[in-house]
Image 1 (cartoon, one colour):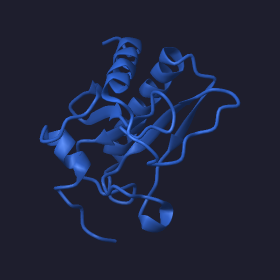
Image 2 (spheres, one colour):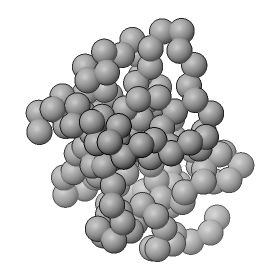
Image 3 (cartoon, one colour):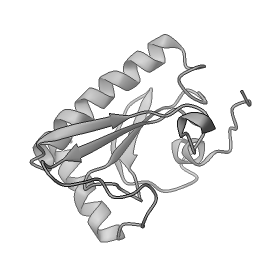
Image 4 (cartoon, one colour):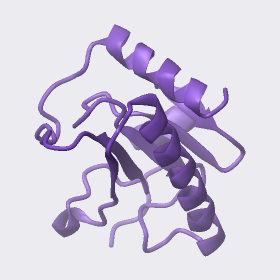
Amino acid sequence: MAAYDPENIFAKIIKGALPAYKVYEDDKTVAFLDIMPRAPGHTLVIPKHPSRNLFDVPIDELAHVMKVTQMVANAGMKAFDADGITVQQFNEPAGGQVIFHLHVHVIPRKEGVALKPPASYHEKPEVLEEHAKKLRAALGG
């Protein structure tokens, strides 16, 4: 397994070097919208700890990521009147991982509506901002 790259795109978001449509942040995690969502409200939850993936994250950091994942999932159900939530997490290239900073996908779902293909289009900024506002409100922010 390769070493963690401190210049990966998510590390840059954590440092504030790249913008993101943040919906939640605390001392250990950041949750922000995927700019190529598979469904409205598709959010990524990441640890601030420099972890490549599930294999190298300290267990207490992982537990906090999952706590925030649950919070975001509940907010997604409410904000998007969802019928369910898909939670995905990929590890290493053979497991489907593309960005090598641990991240959990939280995707609100509607019954009978298929997910869009991965990385198939960039959502419009005004749509992402509206979705971020809805999620922040559902999270109490």
